[in-house]
Amino acid sequence: MRRAKMSNAQIWLFCGGTILFFLAIFAVGFHFAALSADTVEAAAIPQPVEAFAQPINLGAPYGKVSVSHLMQYCIANPPRQTGQAGSKPAAPVSNFGGC
Image (cartoon, rainbow, N blue to C red; front, side, top):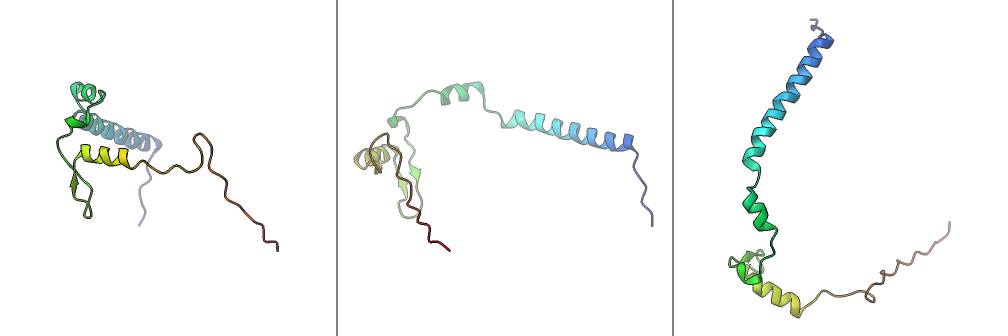
């Protein structure tokens, strides 16, 4: 059974039609997915910790924890610093064992 060959014009028409079809889908989808200007503007303004009334779910071992409690924990237990401030961590020692 022989397959019909597509001409160059048919190939270009198929590719162009496919691109236009998906561009139309993206244009319509973007309208539904885009945030409003008010939401974007509100997200750019930093909020105080007290503004976050809803607790954050940290998973099974911890459950729901308030943002203010997380901030207090981070202040009381800062991350460990390796080396001195502003210095790069030491490179790992690599010993060549020979052949």
